[in-house]
Image 1 (cartoon, one colour):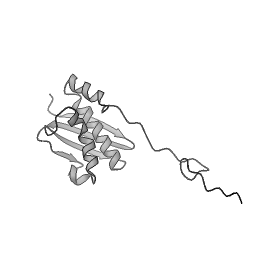
Image 2 (cartoon, one colour):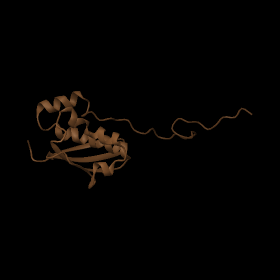
Image 3 (cartoon, rainbow, N blue to C red):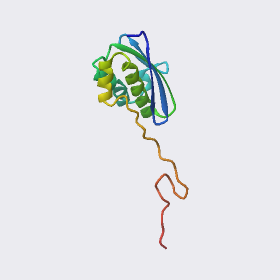
Image 4 (cartoon, rainbow, N blue to C red):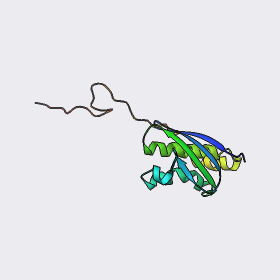
Amino acid sequence: MASVLYGTGRRKTSIAKVWVKSGSGKVTVNGKDVKEFFNRSTHIDHLMEPLEAITASGKYDITCKTIGGGQTGQAGAIRMGVARALSKTDENTHTVLSRGGFLMRDDRMVERKKYGKKKARRSFQFSKR
């Protein structure tokens, strides 16, 4: 295995640059500890899913830089970056992560607002009289 593995992840408008190296399981996001950066434990669980899929939680140190979007998008972007970095370790890991759906980009984005509407689909209130 290479000393440091790199992966890029994207989700909604968030972009995450992720570096994975063998270590004790320390996760750092934008220079802060993961528990300090994310408010919800579900976000932390979400980004650790690729490690649990290959039964390697606690074996790798993860360092991330994220920009754009909110916390949910950033957690999803980190998850994809971790999966992409780990998939470079060996062919078996790549297969497990691919079957788990961790390497597939979630292309859902916010729908744009249309003219003549209040939001993307919401119309203004209609009054008959």
